[in-house]
Image 1: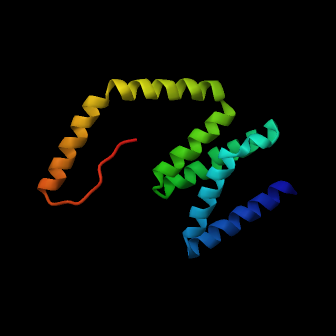
Image 2: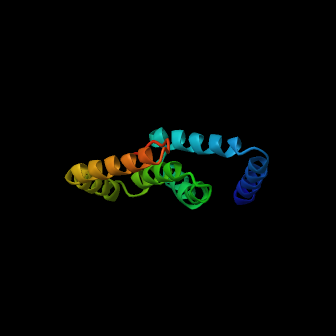
Length: 127
């Protein structure tokens, strides 16, 4: 059956990832690309791919400490599953970010200065 085949594919992917984590990285980037170019598929197929992404790929990326990848996968999935809600959310985040930009700039600067004072070479940025 289709679900058994999918389960077998996931199992193979995880086993390969144990040997070489780059396999999972490729899977994540491939999924991001698929979600960015998904418009050609019918809406039901889009929904299935987006749901699978949220239930399998997003938690896995988070578990592996790949927060940016998880966030990107989740955002792309939400745009497919709940486009109106995702647009409202993006607008609210954008507005809050612009309202708090000067405060965020001060915090970034202070963190950078503290790291520099302790001779810690790091890149400070926010999402």
